[in-house]
Length: 238
Image: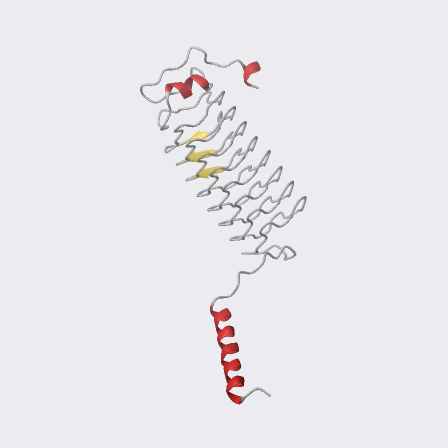
């Protein structure tokens, strides 16, 4: 039979352990079976080919979540963490991604039509052939992002960082390029700037301009010259 002193010691120890875990709770596991909702944790969950149109996922934890071919139109993803999320061929038209974190996200052929992406972070994201037509891209970070053949038609860009981004064959024709666009060290092979005013863009070099495509209506920053190769041959560009 344990002594009274031993029993008291065990009780004290148990109480201390309980107090410790109450003070420092273990992180909640991802609730992959949880219904969509504000602040839901779907880390590394498989959410492919679903219809989540109009869902409220504000502030959701979606790191590594697989949204391949999922309908996310009109969704509220404000402040959501989509780090390394798979958005392959998903639809985010008219969605709210203000302040969303899409660092290292995958988005081949993802649609962002008329999407509000203000203050979002796409650093090192892979967004080949993504369609940003009509979207709002204010204070967005695309540093080191892969944006080859992406479409920015009718998109509004302001204070956008394309530092070291790959923009090969991306199309900015019809985009609204406001102030604060940074192209420092961006790869601009056959990037379409036909009819665009780049006079306020920063970080552009003559070498980048020689690789890119423009026309007689393209305005360049002071000190840069329009290449004799402009306009580009459409057969070569497409």
